[in-house]
Amino acid sequence: MIKNTSSNNEFSFLTCIYSVFLCIIFGANAVAIKISLCGLGVFTTAGLRFTIASIAICLWAKTSGLSFNIRKGQIYQLFVIGMIFTVQLSLFYLGLSKTNASRGTLVVNILPFFVLFLAHFFLPGDRITIRKIIGMLIGFSGVTFVIFEKESVTADFQRGDLIILAAAFLWACNAVYVKKIIAAFEAFHIVLYPMIFSVPFFFIGGLLWDTSMIAYVDLKIMGSLLYQSLVTASFGFVAWNNMLQRYGATALHSFVFIVPIAGVMLGWIVLNEPITFNIIIALLLVVSGIIVVNFKPQKRILLFPIGRWL
Image (cartoon, rainbow, N blue to C red; front, side):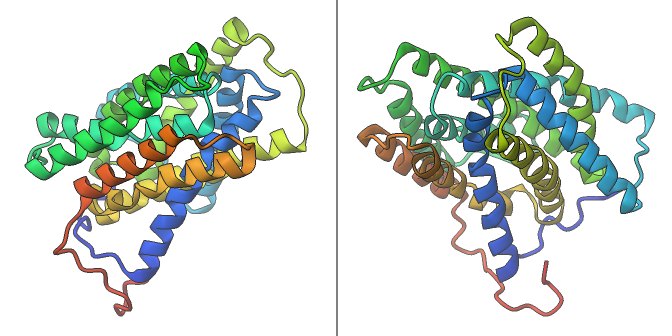
């Protein structure tokens, strides 16, 4: 099993670029989801995404010679993760079906602040400081600019924002729980098994609640579905968990401010979503809050360390 022995490794220059790249592809995910929802049902989209992703990860792990074995005591831990994962993603997709990708990206990026709050109580040594409190307040104030925006915003948009906020809280619960147990797992176990667990529930949800599971499919919708499945849910999740094990959450999360920037800009560029004054203020506040929380002035970035290329 992989042990979390490298969480204090310093970032090389290429590792920084790689982390930025991961954050950008995660930021683009909400845009891809919005595109797929044009022809697919909410729960059907999630079911198809994680079916494809599960198959892709299984094939990759098999060809890489990785072990699928887990210990008996880990079954319960994966069951807990799977349950939370299913509910959080259901809420996230449902919320995005009612609001814009840019708004959804901003709201869900309250996640680091929820993680920070929960970690104070459930992760030994991960304490809230005055600096972190200030960062949290800045970030939360940004989200309020989105949720309480009135101009050209329907009640459905606001409901979608609140649903995504609930999804972000559950996501944070999952993240904190994963941090407690991840050292005892192969990184892909934490990704694969909750996905496999969730797929039947997503399709049952599609049968029960999607107005039309598959209304129509074109190349754009297929491309967006493959992006969600292969780029973020397969490569992205596994890569992020590998980075989490190697460098630790503190170092890695110093880059997550890029996710809301990428989401808002791509929502504007790809979906032609409006960037209102409130969205701009919210983006600045959320990004500023994340930076304040994660700012470590004493942290060095090694530009060309021998033997540390990712």
